[in-house]
Image (cartoon, rainbow, N blue to C red):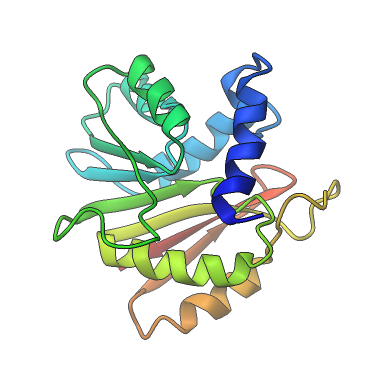
Length: 202
């Protein structure tokens, strides 16, 4: 199966079952989803800044940011039109796009202060390390200040074949190959038993 077919099959089959948002997105609970957002909000200063949410899903992040009363210039993009439709219904007036930004230039010369990706590397696509390296290169090109993304931890106690797992040391090795484009890498662990977040400061 091609990447898009794997992604569509996984998520849209869940949407058809009437699951809560976090269940559709593959998170174990609403609290776990929120914890991932909290790592982003505590790791970089988003006040008055532009944020690109890659794999925005159903618009839960901008909803959460709004609940915090934060002034963030938000843009969301997702490869699935069905997700973008849900996000637009949830957050009327917010900026959402249906596109695969890793397939080619989409935003032209436009760049963002911070680029964030939550969960887009979790599904086992058969070539996740290559995908991560290529995606990180694209996201760094779209960011002025930082790229933040989370991954499933290789030491997770409940690993499943349909998901892809990484180790923090592996991410350090990948970032070291980015020709000095990342000035500082922070890894945040232990907020969940099966997850960690990488903060790449430019």
